[in-house]
Image 1 (cartoon, helix red, strand yellow):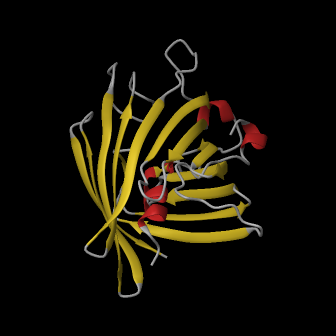
Image 2 (cartoon, rainbow, N blue to C red):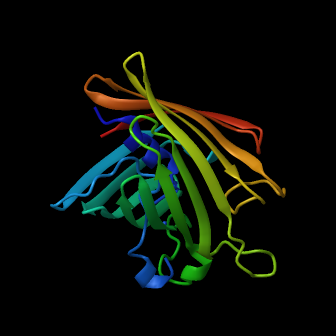
Length: 245
């Protein structure tokens, strides 16, 4: 069964995250943010997969309804290059690219997010339609697999009213565990000093944006997961169910 580490990475990413381009050069970059326990490999490995989710929720924020989310990655000796996307059955469209490196418990990556929607130009005006995020994550070990991550938009469309870079930031703690034979993970994420570009509130100061619990289990030979995600900053809560292929 695909474990909860992979499920949490893809549903929260983007998310990230992601995940994640300044023009065509940066379009080759993206991160497997907060990848837990990645081991160096002598041979390149290609992974493909997809999720079908009841709604797309990222960092505690609702993006759109029922969505199909394919992804692929190439991993070699701790390096990873990936592509991930999400589309609903109307006009929502997201395409993210990532480049990452992991050694031991440390993961570094860059993600280019693009979610301008169906029919929007991808390569034209990349500075106004792409958001580039850097992520640093650390997993403390197998006996205590807590992962702490720090993600900041450092280029692209994340701008203040005066046109300067806003440096929207998201920090998160996540912890996987098993309960009753079910793979689970808890996560708490926050914006440390101001409302980031993706959080639809206008506040300053520390704001908790995501408190989530994810459970993954195989059902009729298909891995499925259920996630409860609360967002205190927006006073919202979500229940998401998904199937992984």
